[in-house]
Amino acid sequence: GQQLNQSPQSMFIQEGEDVSMNCTSSSIFNTWLWYKQEPGEGPVLLIALYKAGELTSNGRLTAQFGITRKDSFLNISASIPSDVGIYFCAGRGGGGADGLTFGKGTHLIIQP
Amino acid sequence: GAVVSQHPSRVICKSGTSVKIECRSLDFQATTMFWYRQFPKQSLMLMATSNEGSKATYEQGVEKDKFLINHASLTLSTLTVTSAHPEDSSFYICSARVSGGPRRYEQFFGPGTRLTVL
Image (cartoon, rainbow over all chains, first blue to last red; front, side, top):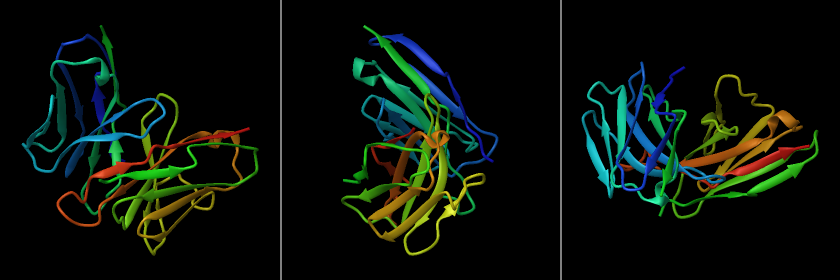
C-alpha cells in the first residue's frame, strides 16, 4: 500500500523559532492534508492542498504541495507554546480511493 | 462548521463483549465516513470506509465480521467491535467529509473513543 515518510520524528525547539517538517512518498497523491493532534483528541485539520505546486497559508502556518505530487512540507513561523502537539501529514490517493494515508507524525516540543 | 462527535469518549469492557461506537456529523451531511484506529504513539490507520446506504469497504487485514459498520443516515455511522479482546484496546477515531463541493476531500475528525478491553 501507499506509505508516507514524515520527518523529523520529533523536534525540540525554543519558543519563537521557526519549524519545518515534510512528508515524501513513492506514490502520487491528489490531495495533501496537514493535521495537528493533541493527546487524547482527534486530529484537527490545519491546511488542505489540492494542486501540485500550491502554496497555502493559515496564520503562521504555510504548507506546499510538491510539484511531483509526491511530497509536501509544513512550516510554522515564530512558534508559541500552544503549537505543541503531533503534526501529521495525510495524503489522498487517486483511483477513487478516498481514505487517507497518514505519516507517522512529527512531535513538536517547545521549550520556553 | 464541520463538527464531528463520537460517543462514548471512553469505554471499558470485559473480554468477549461487544461495544458500539457512534460517530455523528453535527452540522453537515456526510455520505462517507471513515473509521481509523490509533495505537499509543503511533499514526492513524484506516480501518474502513463507511458509505451511507451501502456496505462498508474494509482495508486489507481488517475483519469485517469483527468490526461491524452501519451507516444508516447521512449524519450517523456506527462501529461495533464484536467479541472484543484485549488486543482490540485502542483509540478509535472516525472522520467525515462534506458531500460534494470544493472541500469534499477534507476529512473532519471526531474526538476519538478510547476502548479498553479487560
